[in-house]
Amino acid sequence: MNKLKTFATQKPVLFALLALILGVLLTEIPLRDALAPYTGLQVAHYLTIILEQGLVGGLSFWLLARFNWLDTAGFTAPKQWKALWLGWPLLLFTLINIDEGIVIDTPKPVLIVLHLLTALSTGWVEEVLFRGVVVTTLLQRWGQTRKGIYLSVLVSSALFGVVHLTNFLVGRYPLLNNLTQITFALFFGVMFAACLLRNRTIWPMIILHAAVDWAGTLREISVGGGLRLATPLITAENVIVSILITLPLFIYGLFILRKVEPASLNLENAS
Image (cartoon, rainbow, N blue to C red; front, side, top):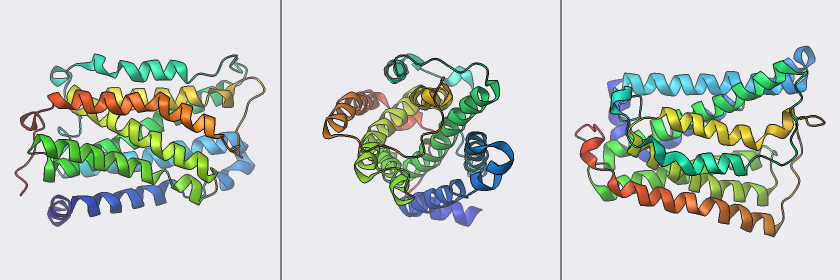
């Protein structure tokens, strides 16, 4: 484990890429089709996501614990938390992201609970892996300066965006949809990482990330809803609107990063 930690601190980008590749592979195990004959497609879909993302998030947490990086990654005591109000734009975005006219199909409580757990598992795995493992690894190498903190956040957010290319490669999204998703994933990544470093806790980011995903997929558990297995191609107008809505999160994230000091990050002495 010491050799792995040394490798992570000396080759942080390579280590981050390997961690992300492993995470993607573990969350692309075709478990859904095996479960569907017994549970139905939608339940199998949710169970697969919950189990696989829960596993990858758990492994990421375990790695941070073994490296003694939990504090830098935001797994801190409440007395260390600061400026939690800075996440307010994500609450606003969650409200904007709820489609009008949604009526939850309340006679299906199992689906409602699984849908919520799916969103929570997404917030859990993406924050613990990207903001926990990736940002913390980069900070160990570069976080001794303000410039290095910005570099760590931008590189981790770029990786967060690029990993979403998986959705195109496995056929879930058309290319234009996926490129748009990559762009606003980068913007969100900066916002999430900045709030993590300012707040000194990862938990609000996990919850807010889950809330954004939950709000954006409510139609799946609405009356007349269900899984949308084929994603329709978005228009150029949709692309522009999506970028304009999420670009302020990117700018805001960079803005609030200015008050993050290297001394507050509890970093090791990395050369």
